Length: 173
Image (cartoon, rainbow, N blue to C red; front, side):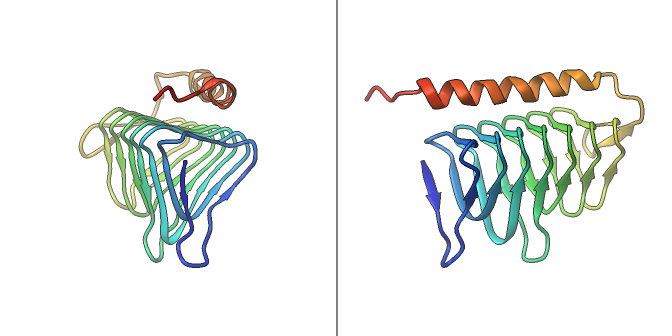
């Protein structure tokens, strides 16, 4: 796997976290217990830090970055879908950020909230706990149509999948 120090700054990866061999982790990136980072995801903590909570998955092709004053912080049991871009924002526990979404500077995705696929959460936007953010730019729908147990089940699926990959993945070329 491609894990890089940047000067004296090295990633901190819990021994129970899973990083796919084709993911890239650079600099001040902190992966919590049971976290998983999937193929072609890039987490680049070069200006501030990136923190990924316990049992959170960062799926294929996602890009997480920070700024010189804004870390990117993702809580526990979150699902960061495929091809998501997070930068200088906060995603709180149990939230799901759908495939192809963008979450920008100082935005906060509340606990158990859902960002719909391809949504753009603009700078400083707050998505309340349990709400949905849909569209470009994202608009809030207060009553989530997706029950919280679906997000939790998806997060647990990736915890189990990471264990399988850690034990069974083998390169054939």
